[in-house]
Length: 276
Image 1 (spheres, rainbow, N blue to C red):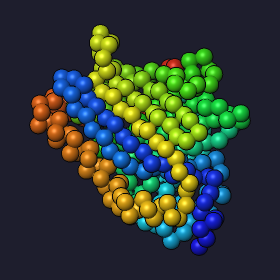
Image 2 (cartoon, helix red, strand yellow):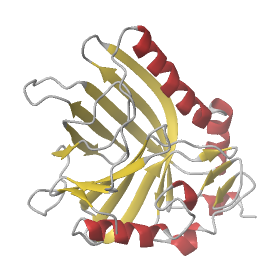
Image 3 (cartoon, rainbow, N blue to C red):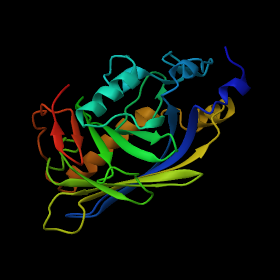
């Protein structure tokens, strides 16, 4: 068991976050939720696997935990190996710097991540690639690999457009495009995902924003979050279904889940890519 100072690791950040989601057509439906998340440095797996206490565990069952099996190939295998293989499908390689994954932790053995973000930096600490790992409530998943169109740095405030190819909400068709934008500061970040379903309409159909302020990762901080939001991860799934019910009740058109495509990865440069 590790002591409290050892848990205060530079390999993990604790984020207090607010999620905003708004549908703008044919009626306005907006909601906000407070959550907390982790940002975990995955290019240091040996050191990361030592961060285990009675409260928090890496690939160990604890009240709050991070499991490899919740990401990547979903089989508990090495996430960096999966990441390299996924990038290879898009014609990319690891930029050579730090690799951070932002996600919800498991709480009491349960987690559902609608979207997790992989931040890939070069050796100068510049953001080069952003991978959005998307899950829907039907047990399906897809990856969007986002990069600068000119092969450079993803600068603060830049917008990256990518075709939508994966079914997420039964109240949206699989068409159109996402526009991703990220703002990073010394204290936190804001990731926006705007969904445009029709190129003839300038207004987005859905706006989503995740605003995160990072705190020191420590035993005391984890206990506080656990006491404040003991059922947060269960609440994520419950809130998704609650909002879906509200949309249905207000008359939003329901679309059945289409067959899952043969592609696992989409890039903003080249569209869908085949399985490895």
